[in-house]
Amino acid sequence: MEGFVLRTIDYQEHAKLLYVYTESGIKSMIARGVKKMNSPLRHLAQSGNLITLELSTGKLPTLKDARLINHYPETKKDLIKTTVVATISELITYNVADEDNHAKLFAFLKKVFHTIETTGYPDELLMVFELKFFHFLGYGLNLKDCHVCQTQANLAFDVNIGALVCTDHQQRHHSHIGPESYRYMQYYYYLDITAFIPQKLDMETRIRLFDTIDSLTSMHMGVKPKAKQILRTLITGGNA
Image (cartoon, rainbow, N blue to C red; front, side, top):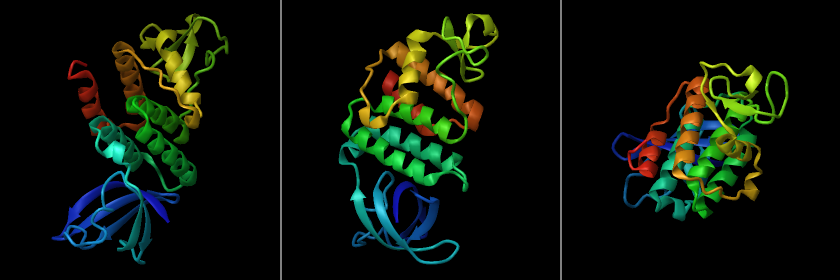
């Protein structure tokens, strides 16, 4: 089977625990001896790699054999890209469930990682992933019309409920963003990722979208990925 290495943890003297995302969900395993300099699996047992893997049987299987498919060299040497991948890995690790459509998410993840490898705008790819991940988890976002009356006029995005609302149905105590920002959310949410075109956001818009998506993540998933906080600091220089 194929899998993305989401996370590694040192285990005993020469081994690591690996958490690998596959078409059937997250698999945990022991990679024995991989911290030895002469281990043939040493370079495979790294977060962010796409590998094939063969496992032993048992509740906590051993990684018997593996082959590297892609280690995404352009991503690995770019700190922002690496942090984007780490954020995606955190979101998957703490939010997918056994009954989810893992084959669909795995195929999408392949496209995401390939595009991160080749783009100069990895933070935009993270927004694409985050917004589509809401849909994957069953939290569909209405980004076409007012969720109350279906009008397409005079709209704003209500951050508190995760949907567009018209001026007649806006609640004053809720947080809203206007079309100058939510139109980018529309683009990312409905995008075929193979046709991704960077929107080259200015810093103000980027921060506003980060804040909005982070609020939705906290509301629906109850998590704040640590890597996302690092990413914000890298992009803004700690000014947001």
